[in-house]
Amino acid sequence: MIAENPPELTWTAWPLRRRPARGFFAAVLVVGTCYAAWDLARDAWIAMLSFVVLGVAVAPFFVPTQYRLSAAGVEIRRPWRTSHRDWEDVRGVRSNRNLVVLSPLTRSSWLDGIRGEALFFEGNRGEVLEYVERMVGKSRDDAT
Image (cartoon, rainbow, N blue to C red):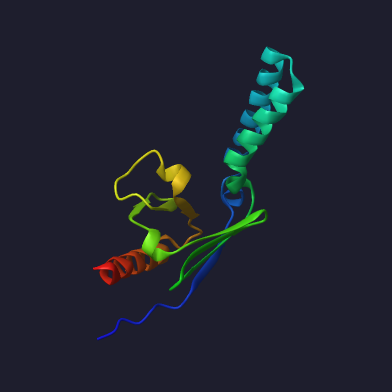
């Protein structure tokens, strides 16, 4: 019997909307770090570089992100970039109460944050985890 692919699952997550206090703390931290970099180095380029690096690191928290899970894989759409990952490329799944990380690594690693794709939940944790487990399990079955 051939398993039927589930219908697409789409949602938009915006962590800042759910946790504005953390957003304020993150913004203060970024600005404070940039000021400290400028104060220590007395170089505007260092301060701007620190702003860019930290800004890129925390940007997914500050902007709405659209997610689409389908039989073809995962699509993550942000204002500046759209990325796609096939289910066959997902080897590990790690989750907590706020997000699930789809990793190309089978074992947990600090590289998950760099090489993996983080999907933030928006009141749909159970539905997303069920979909991910079904598709990752299916891609593993197809590979054998």
